[in-house]
Image (cartoon, rainbow, N blue to C red; front, side, top):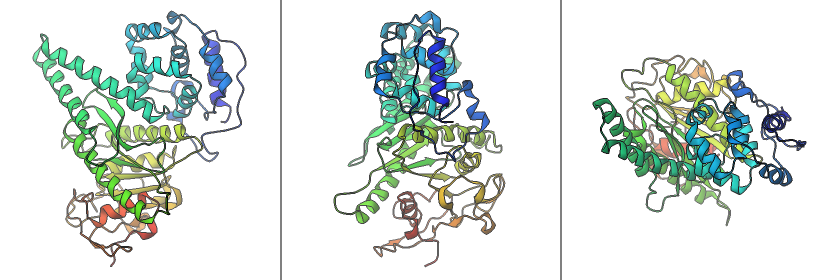
Amino acid sequence: MLFGAAALVTASLALIGVGGPVSVPQYSLVSETQTVPARVSDRQGDVGAAPVWSQPEVQSAGAVDIDRSALRTRTGSSLLVGMSHLAAADLAAFAAEYPTHIDALLAAPPEATVVSAWWTMLDSTQRASLAAATPRLVGNLDGVPLAERSRANESYLRDARAAADRALDGRLSDAERALATRQVAMLAQVSLALQSSADGPKRRLILLDTTGSGRAAIALGNPDTADFIGYLVPGMNYQVEPQMVNWTTVADDLYREQRAILSAHAAAGSTPTLATIAWIGYEAPDLFSVGGRDRAQAGAAFLETSWAGIRASRGGDQPFITTFAHSYGSTVALIALANGSVEVDALVVVGSPGSEIQSADKLKVAGGNIFVGKADWDPAVNSAFFGSDPGASSYGARELGVHGGTDAVTGVRLHGSVGHNDYFTPGSESLHNMALIGTDKADLATDGDE
């Protein structure tokens, strides 16, 4: 696995006529125990862990000059490598002439470890040219650092909004006008959700897909450097247009609770850093489509590759990653963690209708840090609608206190959560416990007993 990405990039260079040896550094971004399922590793024939490329290789790679017509038949990593060697004008022309090539790359991208190796070998001019000519591609490739993805996606957001506005000014059929109107509304919500709250952290657009009901993710804080990263995975009816602003507000509330905990417990001058991610990275079901698992399966694949992107781009500086999954989103997260391609450090599941994963020991979560919260009057919990109930005692997860309690450190009274949508309310035992778990202080979390 160590040599896979180096061999892959060497082969890609050879395919476009670039000669010369490529050395293999003695470093891997993926631990020896981490495995990748066939459905992921078979993408575009890319296999292996990503090496860190040396500066001489970056400089030599940047000196290559190729003809864009040679890339028409390229796919996967071969296409990525070739595009990065085009002059800026040729790259823009290629993107305009062959937009389906970009579509194909995003539909079946190389593994995040391979993308990370490719991005690392580029110089600043190549990266800037790619982001300017293909912002949608750079912004949505897992393995590219998230701050750079955000800058590309914000450019893509501006372009997409302008294009949708122009379309509405033209002559359209009723169906075309309805589509353009929905897209304008969706992009407007993303733009609004990107506005930071008072005293809140900078927000970054780390995912933007405008097809269908859309997919988007907004990071609060800097995931490229944060010590603790929290993924918030929503459930039914959480599509981008109606819920992006709301879900980002939830991420902001969790960020603030975590920041308060870290400030209270930090040694002088050494407060760790945070990022929370409002992730609507799959097409969540509505009332008419919630009965099946197909969207959960698709969402699980997207969630896995997003985690893999963080792991790959962070290299030897790995963050503590916690996933907070609500309702149908818990079904998504449980499937993703059972697939086992990426390990997270903790999992919190609330309001879960279950999944086919039958026990906690099937989940790739470090140290068994799996917590399940079940509020009073929540009709989803105990239903096991989609399979095993993760809150059952036989499942092997730990109980998350959500009924109301007392902060073990400050003595502050925390109120209980009632119903299906009350788990993330500020001041609740549930949210406080989530913040403790997400900052690696699960020993201070309550389990529902006073």
